Image (cartoon, rainbow, N blue to C red):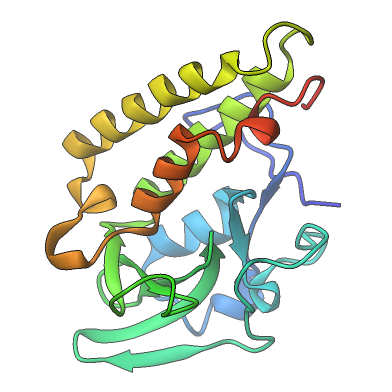
Amino acid sequence: MLCDVDGEGEYGGDRAGHIRASREVLDDVVHRPEDLRALCDIGFPQRPFWMAPVLAADGCAVEGGRPIVDLDDEVVIIEEEFGNILLFGAVQGWYLFLGLDDGTVHALPGEMELFEGDLRPVHTDLSSLRHLLELLHQRVLKVGRGEAGGDPSAPYAELARFAGGIQDEFARVDPVVFCEEEARESPWVYFFGDLRDGLYGTYYSRPGRV
C-alpha cells in the first residue's frame, strides 16, 4: 500500500497514492532545504513516477510491480561535469536524477536503443516535476470518478486536449520540460505523444478509479 502524505499544500484534497522519501536516508545527502521538503515532506504521486525504493520513507512501500527501469537498492550519487546528481526515481523508461548543487532534475534513458542521447535536464527544480505529476494524478482521479459507458474512443480526444493544455502551460512555466533541441528530448515528449495517441486511454478512462 502506498504512503498517504498528509498536508493540504497548494493542491489540497486527496493525497492518497503519494510517496515520500526518508529524511533519515537523505539528511546527509541532500543539503538544500527546499529539495528535502519536496522529497521528504510533500512527496510525489506515483504513476508514471516511481521513487527509488531505498529512498522511500518507512510505510511508503513502492507500488506493486516493477518500474520500466531497474532502480538500485542503495543510494546512488554520480559525479558529472556540472556537479553531483542523486538517483531518486524513474518515469516511463527514464532514470531521474536530482542535481545536489542547484536542484535541477535530469533524466537518462533506461534503454539507449529506444531513446537517443544521454543525460539531459528535464525540470528546473523538483517543484516543476511535482506540479506536472500532480496534474496527471488529478486527471486520473477526475476521470476515474466519471460515469461508465459511452463511446470507448471518446476519451482520446479529451486526452489530446488535456495533453496539449499541459504542454502549453509548461512551455511558459518551465520550457525545459518539453525541450526537443538537438535530439535531447525530455521523457515527457514521448509520454505526452503516447498520451495523445491513446496509449494510456484505458488507464486514464478506467471507470470507478479513485
